[in-house]
Image (cartoon, rainbow, N blue to C red; front, side, top):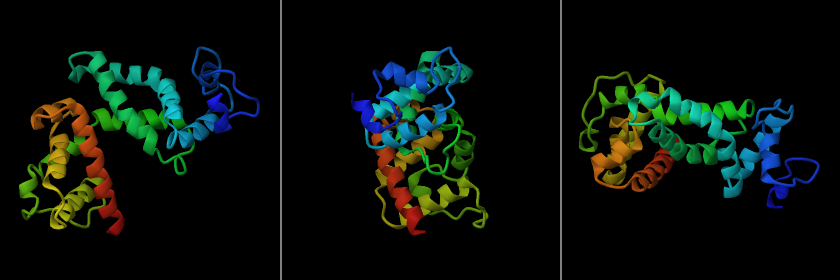
Length: 213
């Protein structure tokens, strides 16, 4: 069985259902080793899509509960769940397990909820940045601020100064102004998948700028 190569347990696994139970999925008591198994599984998920799908399957009950809590801003709970699941894949693939190696499922769900629904900081940023062509405007902000919001503003300015593709910046700004990926896609006149692909490219480039800074 492919999952045996992940070396999650001492004894060979007989099925993915058995693995899901060991991660704490189900109505029975949560196994003591569930968090340790999740750590190893998330590590494998970075390079193995099957492992990532297992992690996603384990998260589905929590994602459903989160969608129910946040469904008021969507047409249906199913739409809210779709938004969460679309964010979950990136969260799983990029989760910093080395720094956040406890309560793995809880942390994964928290990250998904943040990226899918918690837009307060994005709305704050919109007051500073409204359109890529205006990123070079002088804005009265305290550049000594260490809040993530100010970091994003500085990165966007640096991206523009370095000649970054304006289309990438348009995606970032569209996401900042939208509550969901679907809304951003509608504003840009492209598909959800296109927005997510361009978003990932933009994020990687901004990360490079952040590392240089």
